[in-house]
Image 1 (cartoon, rainbow, N blue to C red):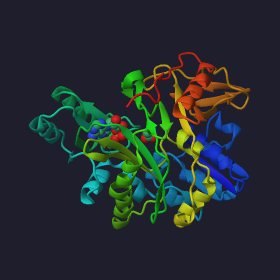
Image 2: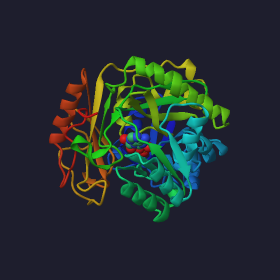
Image 3: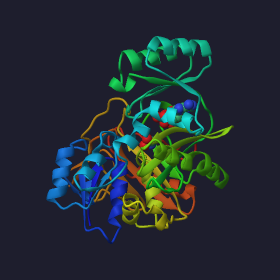
Length: 421
Ligand code: AMP
Ligand code: GLY
């Protein structure tokens, strides 16, 4: 088989390395990929939003399956276009990807189908949003831009002044463009967070092993929200009892709700959960693998990923038995100094072998480029240094040992992955 993976981050590298293990696959392409990915797949210079380019390339090169990994092309209907052109694609159609790309849609879906989530109101008028927040007078309060905002469209306001500023930035200054035409104003929840990714073909849903993301830039959960600074799997807060509650009250109702709305979801559905004192609630849905959740979940997968991908596309997921390794996994993200704000690019990375790997860990490249045999930084999140071991502590120790051998100017990483709530 010939498989094309769309995207250029650590998540895509983890997907590609797993696909590479399949005996069914003899060619993997990545569009556009990155320096590290080029060691595992042929990188082609086509953007993830270029529907015509992707269709033409897939036809010319007899690609069997296109795996659409990032949120933007899913929301823009890449899977619809590929399918209309007779090309098999993994991922939801645009009408289902809306579960991630519109928070107003997902909140209304949860309300309509009684899926537990934070109480909320939707506003398209900034003055009304501010008035509502004033009347409620309960802080912190959570303000979310409706649309995609690179994970940055969520503001937890501690005071009325911060809330007013957040509404202004999102709705009037249009900090996230049209994503801020509407906002969700939401009750602040507390408790440990859990990420659960699940395969679904729209008929059955199979949760993957749980994980935990560390979203803040600095140790002790300080600093700005990022795309994710590190992950562990399994998530210690996700007990079998909680998993069963989630299956009954969240996972299966979500698949059924999407079917009832004629928006059948096929692909990887990501549940961002909070285990609150009142039980598990949905913080957000994503229509794709998480990044860096994929980097700890996929290495633990024993079953051939390509078998699962085909079963999801062909709507026969219930016939596949999906197995996981007992080992725990940990991923420490090495980021550019300054990330998630401004940072330098093009700095040489030392400590990696010629394949961009290191012994004792698996390196998923996120923002790297390869020039004349050397790897250079090329993005905010640079590397996802991942290790597996019998226990989480050992996996973390192995990952941090590998991190200590890799360097680039200004490299920044958290030293407490796996330690905070
Ligand atoms: P989201 O992009 O919706 O996942 O939000 C980003 C982060 O903001 C989440 O991972 C949570 O840590 C936090 N967050 C979002 N919504 C809430 C909420 N209602 N209560 C408390 N924290 C929240
Ligand atoms: N790590 C969070 C996400 O992928 O949205």
